[in-house]
Each structure stands twice: as structure tokens, then as C-alpha cells.
Length: 370
Ligand SMILES: [Zn+2]
Image 1 (cartoon, rainbow, N blue to C red):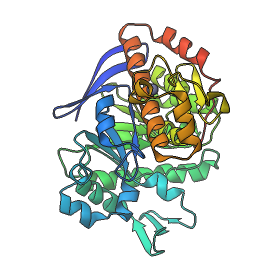
Image 2: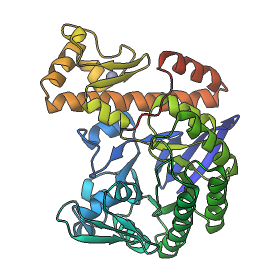
Image 3: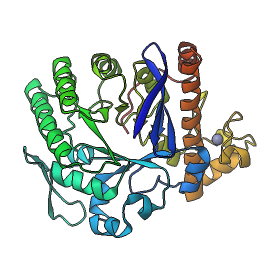
């Protein structure tokens, strides 16, 4: 992986990530392909939209189809037939949301949600599996905490994440796979700083900010970003894990974040919500029952080129899978266009104006936990 910042507007960056022949313009939004597919959307559409980097989940793939199957295919790219680049998370976020898990310095012990068997997720196991997956970017195992926890608890999670990060780096051997460290520390500025300094000491190809957008107030998300981002090295990519609403992406990009992922655009799409430049539309509304217009006249996606609001309304209210597919395609197209126009505005020195325009048409920023 190679990364280059091409242009800045204050702290905002327009750059390029390279994985061999694959080039990804940043800031980038990565669609989430939890089970080795972006839900409801065949790869063909992602390619047509210009997505070259998607995110898949180590935890889910470890449970099913499992290491042996992926090995037999020679990696995740071949298993899922995806020619673009893939980032795999470490499974930390998923494991910590399972009830009844126990965490020790060794790893996380939890019951398999499939057959109830006990599974110990260690840094070594997470890295070994990501090596088998052969993703272009692997993530270290981290302990993701809730935002409002006591200081001592947050400190322990930071220390454990650092210990695991070191172990992950030791086990990571693939030269064709980048490895990202993860900054934790809940909402404590001192812990965030400690986490950054120690993670930088270990040294990674890129740096992720974890444990944010997990239910905290919006002003607190920004307060922590303001502490963390200036401390990260200019030349390495910065990734805000789990953020995917335009109004929050704008704030994070303004502060220097390069990479994002979130289930938001795909999940709300499957539930009948269309993202547009004028805000969100609920396609379930009876107001669209006879509407011959496309979802968004400005939009060039497959859905808007071919179908009316009335048809989408019909499919979604009839719970047709095709309706979910068409709305997900539209939302991912919107996100792609949104990121592209934002990047253009950085390159042209017009970012502030772009941000103002988008925020005036979208609702007041809130952190939505999906
Ligand atoms: Zn569209």
C-alpha cells in the first residue's frame, strides 16, 4: 500500500491510496461487506459506481465460512470474486458487543453465536486469519469501549489494546498487506494522547480512530478528534471507524480524516430511506405512490436512470428484495458522489463553501447509532 497526500485545505486532505494497480482517491467511503458481500448489491454495481475499496469483517468470516474454506480459495478476493481492494477489521468491535464475553490480557473469550462453543480470540489468531484472508489492509485487535466509562476502565482498555497491537505487529508477516493500528481512550483526552504516542511508537502503515461514533454526544466526538488528529503523522492514512453520515464525515474530513466505513447508507437503504443532496427521503411515504420522478433528478445511478419514485415505493412497501437493492445502489452512488465532490472542493480550495452548502440542506448533525 502506498499513500500520498496531494493537496490540503487547512487540515482537510485530498490524497491517493495505491494497492498495486488499484488506485483509491481519498477521502474515501468504504461500503461494508460484512459477509463477503455488500448486502443486496452484486459486485458489478459497485465496480460501475467506481468503488475500489470495501470493508469486510474478520469476526463473521472466521465463524462462517471459516479459515479452511477461505484457505482453499487462496484468500478472500478469490472466494468472493472481488478484484478491488479489501480492508478487514479485526473483529474487536463485534466481539465486544457480544454479551457474556470475558476479556483478559490474553484475548477475548466468547460463546459462538452459532453453536455455543467457546472461542478465544487472541491477537495472534486474529492476525493469522487476516493473513489467510489476504486483505489489502488488516487491522489490529483492539478493545473498543463504550464512551461513558470510568477512567480506570478506559485506561485498562488502552493498555490492553497497546499490548495486543504489539503482538499483532509481531505476528503480521505479509508484505503485500498493510497493517493499521487503532487509537482508543474513550472520551479522556489524556488517554487518547497516551494511546496515540504509544501506537506511533509501535509504528503502523496507517492509524485508525476507534471507540467513537458509539453513542457519544456529537460535540464530544469532535473534541476527541481535535485532540487525536494533530498528533498523527501527516504521511500516513487516518481512518475513522464506523462513521458514515455526510454531516459527520464533513466534520471529520475538515479535521484531517481520510477513510470512513459504515453500514449507514446500505442499512437505511434496505429500510426504505434514500439519501439525497437535499436530505433523506422516506420512500415508504404514501406521498410517492404516484410520483413519476426519479428519487433524485441530479443522480446518475442505475436506479434513478431507470425507475420512478412510485416504483421504488411499491417495491419497498411490498418488501421486495429488488427494492432494497435499488435503494442501496442509489445510496452508495450518492455517497460516492458526495465523497468525490468533497474531494474536488478540497483540491479547488472551496471546502468551507461545500461544507456550508451540504449542512444547510441536511439536518442538524447528530450521532446516529445504527
Ligand atoms: Zn440515484
